[in-house]
Image (tube, rainbow, N blue to C red; front, side, top):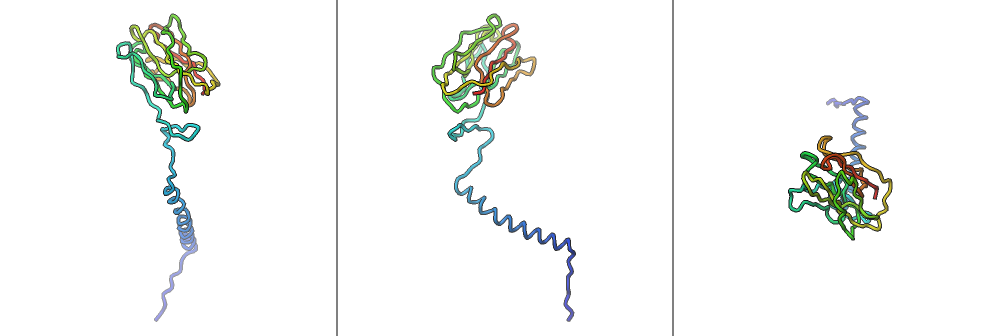
Length: 201
């Protein structure tokens, strides 16, 4: 009885060798992967922000819109968050919403600035305070006031004015990550255009 001999081509032998090596590599990695999950290790979701002590903070989010017609005509960021962006819609940027982002700290001595509009132009939080809310009064939210919270551990750095935001140019302004507002300025009728003085916290 003749023995049947199968001759493999060189590239076929190489492919089989690669497959064997791949199987060995997968077998070595798999236990590590399983052990990391068994030990409770996890990956941080990109929508959340970790503070310096490793605590996972709440995701960023927009507040509800407010105007002089809403009750109350004011809105504040959640505890430990500050203003990291602003959006508005309707005529003269009437309805306003804040983009709140966790800061990794807490605020005390919270207070409101006086209301201001295009006539007074600017409103500043007191030294060491950061913008955590906004209120408005008058037609088309003509005059706004800033809610400010004090954080002694936060030292403002790289401060600058943003560009202007209104419903005509898209109605949304987001600050760079880690930058928060400390002041605001109005321009145009009924404080139609707004910009913000932001610093890296």
